[in-house]
Length: 295
Image (tube, rainbow, N blue to C red; front, side, top):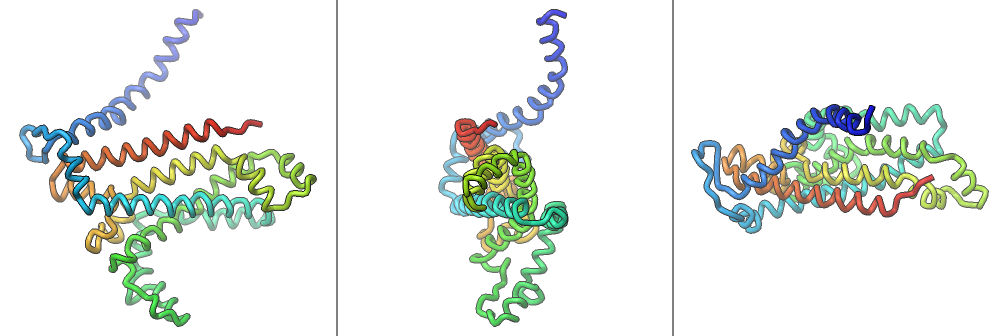
């Protein structure tokens, strides 16, 4: 079989997937970018070209900046807990926990990840309830009544409460991914480090962290992208309130698109989300390729 024929046959196999990607992923992205330059709504006969006015509106919109700040805080906290803490947790599981107990602990850590985000949001709404919630009752039981809050009802605590719930649900999932990455490290590396006198902490930083770099990069991309795409937990727990203090870009986009019927502005917000996630993902991939370790 000639090389040219093999290439055409290979192209025929990937063509359906390529067409689906073009139609359902890349075309909507490009069309959204085009629509962000128009003023239009669900009842518009013909969209009106406004250039960059929707982006200027976003620039002068204080709630847009509040939403962007909340997404940024969400991403930073998620990096600390879902990447940093999860990696430490996975290393502790593999280094110190007896093999029989590892499976049980992995299951316990992973269970929150299989709970629907809507169910988890409702569950934590009860926990945060100022009258019957477990959080305030525990604080009262240990003499910390001054720390009690209406956790989802106060602007100063609403976003933090949502972020805390999200970390609880995601840490187990990312820890299991790190466990998989750690198990792929050849045991000879750890044994050689032990022979050289390296303790657990030194082995963690000199062997484990470099060897799971690719997995770390993947989890960072997923975590940061997820932080800027967060929507369900905010809608279930606060719907962006109180006083728009817990708005994120996703909920602010939703409100402008489907409640305010300002589709052009919503398209501009969607474009901002896309550019942020694309930029972060591209930077992470470039950095990880430059520092890739092979064995």
